[in-house]
Length: 135
Ligand SMILES: [Zn+2]
Ligand SMILES: [Zn+2]
Image 1 (cartoon, rainbow, N blue to C red):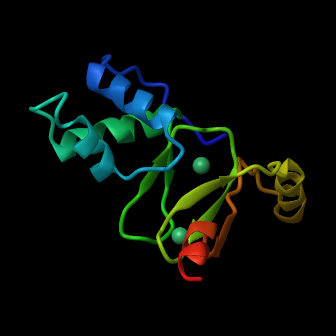
Image 2: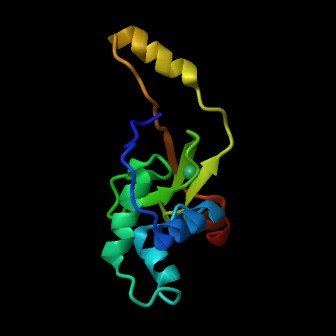
Image 3: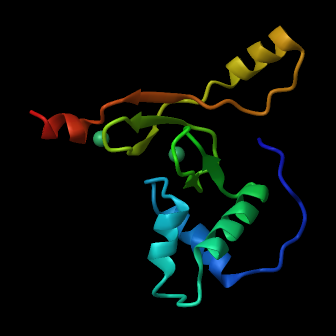
């Protein structure tokens, strides 16, 4: 598990909504997407607010931040470690239902003498939807 910040934050309705939205989707949205989704509900909300709340959720260990070297970070409220497939055509990020190999963490610990918290693995290619479209 990543190191989590145990500092207590003031409860925030907006933050709870952000977490709720993230839990309901498996599309790994960006901050921008979340902002557009909540704008109607909270007219005073700014993109900065969304980023701040996301950072707090990440520090609390409730949300994972995924950066694949792309321009935008994506967010995932499914915090049990899992692997992803990333479509190089449409940018879709898919959860893979394959077991997390904790034994690899131990292997690396043996190799390095370090303490491993987790590892991430991404598979890159063209998703089925994009493949079907181009046929
Ligand atoms: Zn695709
Ligand atoms: Zn995921």
